[in-house]
Amino acid sequence: MIEVKDLHKSFGDTHILKGISTSFEKGKTNLIIGQSGSGKTVFLKCLLGLFDYEGGSISYDGKVFSLLSTDEKRELRSEIGMVFQGSALFDSMTIAENVMFPLRMFTKQSKSEMEERVDVVLNRVNLSDAHYKMPSEASGGMQKRVAIARAIVNNPKYLFCDEPNSGLDPKTAIVIDNLIQEITDEFNITTVINSHDMNSVMEIGEKIVFLKDGLKAWEGSKDTIFKTDNEVVTDFVYSSELFKKVRKMYLEENE
Amino acid sequence: MKYLHNIGAYFIMIKDVFRKPTKWSVMKPLILKDIDDLIIGSLGIVAFIAFFVGGVVAIQTSLNISDPLIPKYLVGFATRQSIILEFAPTFISIIMAGKVGSFITSSIGTMRVTEQIDALEVMGINAINYLVFPKFIALTLYPFVISIAMFLGVLGGMAACVYGGYGTLEDYIQGIQTDFIPFHIYYAFFKTLVFAFVLATIPSFYGYFMKGGALEVGKASTTSFVWTSVVIILLNFLLTSLLLG
Ligand SMILES: Nc1ncnc2c1ncn2[C@@H]1O[C@H](COP(=O)(O)OP(=O)(O)OP(=O)(O)O)[C@@H](O)[C@H]1O
Ligand SMILES: [Mg+2]
Image (tube, rainbow over all chains, first blue to last red; front, side, top):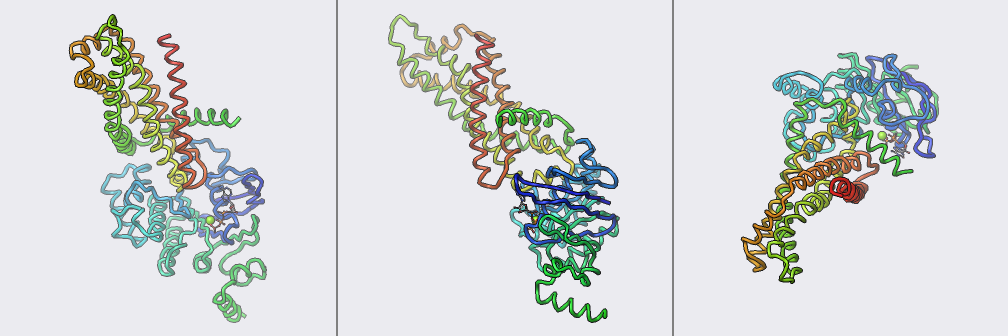
């Protein structure tokens, strides 16, 4: 479980996060949604300690992150998998080497064990024939899937994904969503996902935190998001005609 | 204020280069790759420059000695001294600040702007050790580059002298054997090692701590070249006053 209390973050004079408190439970897929520029990426990077923040606290299963020593932080981080919004693949390595990297770093597995594991994970993201490509030779969607494979290869305890399915076609996006859901359940991971894909929200949003203007505007789940009257949320979530219709049907059905 | 901050951050970075080392099985290929990129990859240009500049030094020395009382072997002697003491260790290092330094800054800087360094940090890896330590180890081989420069510089001087008709082979060889002081060699290689450390760390610093996007990578490389050269020139002055003065 990850707990965030009253998180503040500014860049110079611009206040980006203005006091956010929430928690992300173990074994659940937690979604952070909000408009482009609402501070989702900044929030996630604060959680990971990649950005310093001015106020508030973040704790991982009771351990307050800012109080850990550098070595303790590294220890904790070796149990974290992260998918960056821009993939952040190592461009001097092939796709297979990228995925193998956390295993080489943190396990004592033999080469063949690692190769086997890489095959399994690349299969799960539908990339079984791209082992020897360089990241620069892969499409944006492929890079994203490699990043996901790299994040989950070493069975992390915490998984962070910054828009894991942006740039993917709807079918692959659902495969990725389901994959994230499956491994979250299977290994009891604390998963935090940034998204503005409404499909994901409806598929895997076991907990949803809605950010607006640096504040938490709403919190709930995929079941309660249909029913809420919070205008800020409905305005964002049901901005498309399709979702307006879906909501209407849902509400009528549940009358 | 900004300079003081940078100097502080630089020394903290140096400390981190040697903290929590990366696994040897991961580090070894990185070191080999950096030896290839930084050392082997520089041999060609260094050899070329050293040979021809050695030739120019010999020609100019002999042209400036018109007094018949000055012995002919002085050409070889002066060429050897200027190449071993200054040209090879210091000026080749300035050239390397351009070649190797901007390569280091831009490759680490690119990793910074594409969040690859964040990806390393998030995995719990000491990114400074992972990125800088292999370059540091690779550049401990830098004295070999400089010895090649010394040898080829003196050889270039000889070629220019003999084939250009500025003197005889015997005079030149006598010159390069005259008044040989072993301490000068220690001095030159000590300088070289200090410069190697500067070449590995200052460009890494400018790459690692850069902010912004692709445009800033170019700017960071330029800044890194300027400061690497300035530090090399200042340390050269300092070490020379201390060791030879
Ligand atoms: N390194 C930075 N320096 C200055 N400002 C920044 C920095 N990173 C983000 N910001 C600002 O913080 C705000 C939130 O950005 P953030 O990247 O978190 O948005 P987001 O919600 O992830 O958007 P998107 O959905 O488009 O990815 C933006 O106004 C942005 O300009
Ligand atoms: Mg973002």
